[in-house]
Image (cartoon, rainbow, N blue to C red; front, side, top):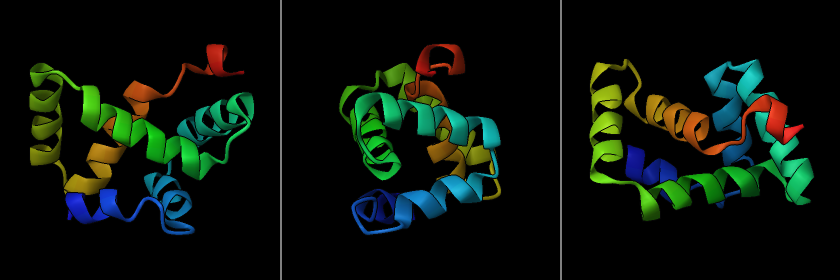
Length: 95
């Protein structure tokens, strides 16, 4: 499931639906601010953040992510939330 979600990030609307499913207005605001600051769409920022994590995460970060997924009802969604929380600039910096 997680792998399919990652693979589908370039499909139109997937990133927007993903962030909407997180039901995290503060995270959405951070995403919107980061996208505006980078002159990119929110979908591009989501895809970049996830791929950046996949490319650069340490063993410890992967272990933390696996733990988060193991405790979650929806592991894929929990993983995406954790990756975005870690990757997006804080609200005060993104604004």
